[in-house]
Image (cartoon, rainbow, N blue to C red):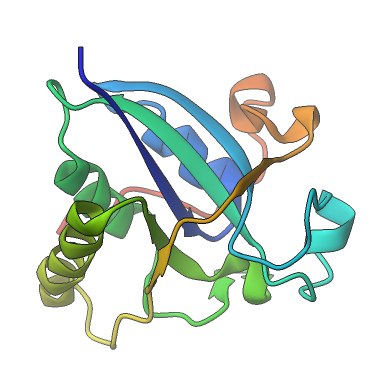
Length: 161
């Protein structure tokens, strides 16, 4: 097993986590806050839109079963990367589309994934590619929320391109 990590943000972290967690080769997921300037933020802090953090998902995956590029390609199918600071009804900078890269390989793969995704979207892709700094775990009630609350609010779905 070759365990690697990826961090993405694409709107409400509940839906992104729910769909990514189901991929074969994904070992674990957790939701949290990434990309901002406040240390140890809470949901109450992040929802103001003033911390710079995005609702994010950290994915641990087995690189022998699923490649980073496959995770990114799926990420571009489960959220709309053309809407700045929003996913459907969720609006604010905390809902922006971001790929947080861990190293130069992930950075290059992020840009390649954006190029591949362009053929599926009519508008420009606004996904940011940002160096990973720190991930702050969200509160426990957010973790695996849609697994614990089937039928809960979700604004993500897999598009068939």
